[in-house]
Length: 218
Image (cartoon, rainbow, N blue to C red; front, top):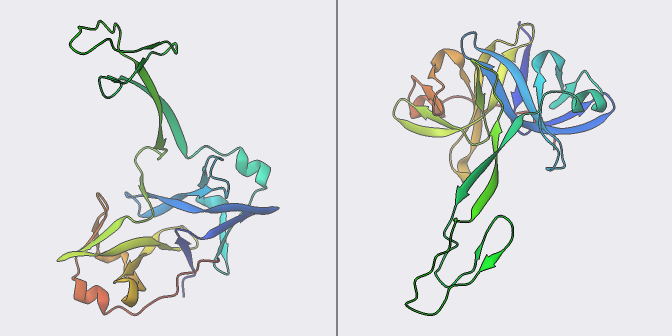
């Protein structure tokens, strides 16, 4: 029987010398149906998540173990990149002070007066974007799974063959809060992965699948 590996979103991850966070995203190559990377988010959210090649990953007893030290983990590619976006804003209501980039504030004059406020305030914000290798896609927490007759649940991860990381099943959480269960859907039932995972089987067929135990050390 072929040995399989479970890549569950939310699973705890550790390096050879200690904990390094949990699985935040799974990156897959749709051309070959293989898992290529895991995004591991350190426990302190101020630290950047890392893009971990799957050949550094082992799974054991529901936990993701990395074949690297924490120092080596910190040197892996970041899983997010940031851009500074600039824009202008009127500052809100007319009675609000207009604060320019240099910090100088101008208050409006009396009612009915025409005001030359000059250049509009410049506002900067940092936008974070997920890093996904070219030609691959990511699966994130909460991504939806659509049966042939409607939405059926949310993706929890993948099961892949241990020797080549080829995906065999999609892990799905289906049902409502009081009737929720996890099931493994054969990859042969998947017809697409854009805007969620799409299946060629019905809700009833998904619901008839036996429940599985998703390894997720807590």
